[in-house]
Amino acid sequence: MTRRTRIGIGAVLAAASLALVACGQAPEGAGETQSELCARMVTNSGGLEDRSFNQSSWEGLQRAEEQLGIEAEAIVSTGETDLAPNVQQAVDSGCGLIVTVGWELAEATTDQAGKNPDLAFAIVDETVEGENIKPVVFDTAQAAFLAGYLAAGVSKTGVVATFGGGNQPPVTLFMDGFADGVAKYNEAHGATVRLLGWDKAAQDGAFTGDFEDINKGKALTEGFIDQGADVILPVAGQVGEGAASAAVEREGVSVIWVDSDGYETLAAQYRPVLLTSVLKNTQDAMVQIVGEVQDGSFSNEPYIGTLENGGVEIAPYHDRAALVSVELDAEIDGLRKQIIAGELEITSPSAP
Image (tube, rainbow, N blue to C red; front, side):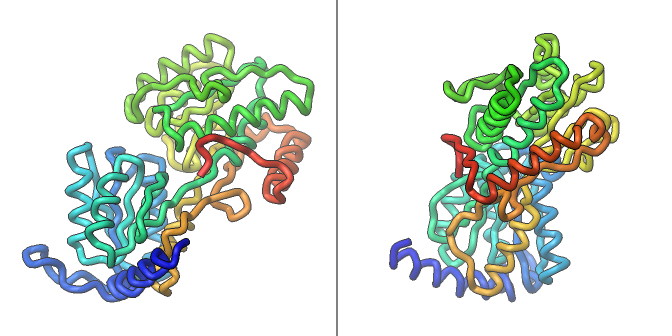
């Protein structure tokens, strides 16, 4: 970090901490003075209850309300035209911390951060540059590696699959880790489990083209099942529900969810087919960032969630636990420890 950047961040800390601790009068016509200790979060077009990182980010700010005494509010975007105005609204609130979620908000976040150097910004699941912007990203390849090893280990057909909503780094990072986990299982066991939907070397594979059309996810998953796949990893937000729907209708098929624990966030009808989830612990990251703004230690250094700091992990096996042998679970735990110790490195062109 350059001296210029350190000085710039120091100014941000002083102003943002003051604004977070005691938000000043909002701009004329914007309503009454904001409550003490406030932050604003702007969702992407997936909305607040997306069972993904909008929801988990909001849960983190709600946790910060309870633990740190802040007042938080979510501003929900329903389409592309909402994004920039909603970030403007967040800035106009007078709060010292503005949280935005996802790549769709990168441009608006960068624009407003440049115009408001005295405010602290955090953007979830995207990396952008700015002296007062903290990227909140996750090395999901580490946890997805464990999920890939698990998938290969429980597969009865010797075929597993993955697909994404779009060919973007936050998506393909999961897919890279998953592919490496399958490959590691094959190496360790002399197995030949095949992965459909992703070629890590070519960085290309199966994508639905959006994160909202559940029917596309179901159709793509049905195609994988027809090719023999019995464990599916959708990395496509709400589209992934289509994979779960297809699995419910086809005996012996399991789904691995992403971002949140799908067993807790998806409809109960999908619980029987959920093997695990690749988790991003956005909740703890939000609490940490609010605390940094409060105590004056906020910086633009990215928060990177890893297995070591608990930022990523795989969820319990829940109703599918009987599929996972004691030996396989022990192997996965051993791999986790190797990754944390730095003895096993999980790489990806999309790594944060």
